[in-house]
Length: 486
Ligand SMILES: [Zn+2]
Image 1: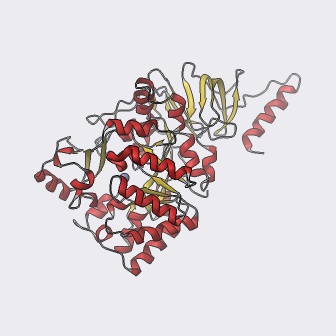
Image 2: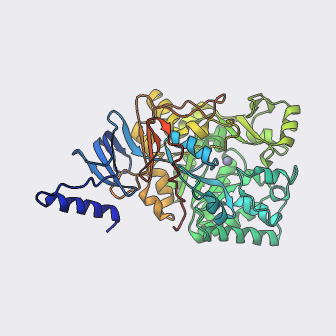
Image 3: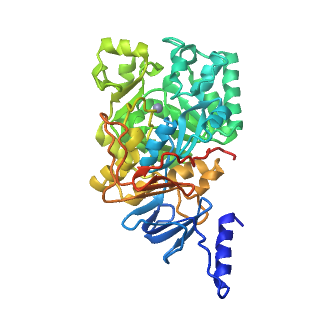
């Protein structure tokens, strides 16, 4: 019997003995909230009892607890699961906690070496963390042995030291490099990585046959490929889907807002049709019309304007907000740093947010001196407040499904511990977000990108408060690793 259920049995036994008053079986009780659980459709007033980091009671009756928190007037939802979170520093994860996120995973860029990254993260995280093994980082290791990129999005400086056109991104792999990349990927999967992450646009020299060989590893190991496609638009997405189909690989296309760019209706239709035809294929979107990435990356190699369908003036230097010119583009590209890319139309982003099955994921990049893209701070509250409540693009329950049970299900086939997340259920992990449906809203903007979301008073991770009464619990570090095997 799992430990928490034993608490319940004990409480029952004690309460049935005459003259013996029961001890409080619960560490924390969330009392009087509107519990919304997209997995079961439950939407009703309930009291939640938490013990040993698990949800052990969901009751219409009042519950006694060591600590009782009145959450009446608020929604009690499963903590949000972000499948696309590059910002994995303590500070970045704290900002995400304020947005209701209790699990933040970097499945696109990923990491290499894997075991070492998980070790470094131990004890640093207020919320749960995890990553794929990254094809980008594995590729750099093959061309620059001993480099150990680690977390690509955070350790970009290591790559920048290699100069303007590093081999890891710009050189075709020979037999030896291909073997080394494959070995690194397998090693990462052996160490518990959550699948294989690809940023093909950042490694333009990776040929279709190289990508195919890595997809075959994903298929053989029964883990998904999380893919930022070779280019933006329908052609590259169709090519990736065809490759996944022919190799039998489960596929997740990241940030469909930017990836599909002007082809959103066709891309969403192709994904739905592929699903209906039996493919294991999913996608995600962040609720902003501007993208962001590293200006020094290979995405800005010659020809970037055709790929992104924009020009210099559509780029802004994240540190200052200034729009770029050809001159400042060249200067900042040598220096290296984050740019904001104004490239999407709101109607297309809205199509993806409203589409059943499309998950919400932030693609939040690490904040540097409080600068960056607001998606790392406001994605989830923005969907709940702006797109669900104000624009009525989707119901509150549907919005919550896209940030809880759908991402949990994307992973639980090969990551068993995800079966205990994304749900308000007996025995589930007590990862819980409490928000006010009338006021929840994003506050982060391009001028103030780290401003915390509002209307989210409490966030618990494994039953421990990380956000309490609308403020961060600074010292809380209950975050645990998410891996394929514990
Ligand atoms: Zn990307």
